[in-house]
Image (cartoon, rainbow, N blue to C red; front, side, top):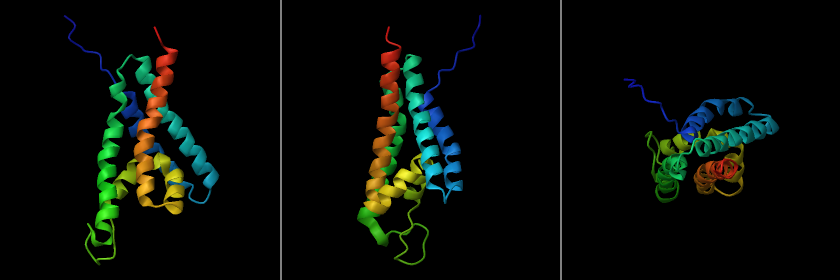
Length: 155
């Protein structure tokens, strides 16, 4: 008997984890915004390709929502920390006006593939709007890739 099972990958999660690694290149081009936007756009397409591959392998549409759920939980915590607690919240200690929030930094860290866009929204609107942008992008990008894959590989 052959008891080896074939592993079924969730490509959205795999590409999301790879985006965390590759997005470090965005920070290395701090003074060249054009290259930052180029790398960010390529990583967004890479993330959408995960949804495309999930559709190609016949996975259900629910397989693309895990990253969205993670970002939704982190986003609610980030918005709560930014808007409700504000400057009163300082997880690292120190002065009351510090306002350092590790949960926001963690969410920004794992979503660095959106860094130039987040930075633009944060400077023009506010931090909470950039958190909402992260949440929406983590839903829309793989969903578009999944729908394109579903249309391409329709039986």
